[in-house]
Image 1: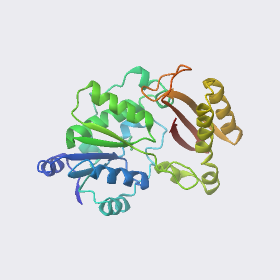
Image 2: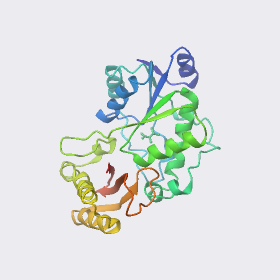
Image 3: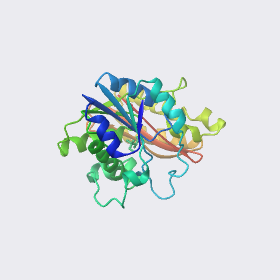
Length: 275
Ligand code: PAF
């Protein structure tokens, strides 16, 4: 695997690369990321991974500084997964001056769910992903479905701005006990790690009720929040939404997704299940 820390270096390498699949990450790679790398290979001649912890998508007081940086181990995993190129720029390479132009998702995404709890987050994500798209110029790009709203923001950006890139979602990879793999799982204490699969189990219960044609969405959401909070979680939201646009569903709608975000101790976890 060739490692590039400059835009010029990656651009030179990509010019003879054929069909390119891009997998943007912030590093601290786990099996979910590696599954995306392998999936990327099915779509392209050349797989480019990126590792960049993007300050723009973190709010002051969030975990930008403590976000795990495990570059050597990440490189080993990417090499073993057969990735061709890694783009791992410095902050000054990506942002040589304060970023003046931004990609602004529309309010129905930017102000909802994750966007409501983390104002400006999706503006930061969309802006860096747009920059990575311009730098690597892939034909296809892959993102995990665990960050369901992020995937939707990126899909919509590509559509609205006519970018010639296919966006592919990768299934969430889970530990044996159901916990969705995430770099932030590493923050959990051993006791919190035992409790953490509850998020998946609570979502599973909501899905079962929906499958039994229960359409009392606010009640299902409230009971799920109460169950988590009674076990020591601080829940930001449990929300039943339409898969197509993450808007509120009507009772007759099918194609639903249940999304949740909650804090366990100081660690904020997100998860979702499609119905
Ligand atoms: O999902 C992530 O790791 C990040 O949000 C992304 C897409 C790499 C942008 O920084």
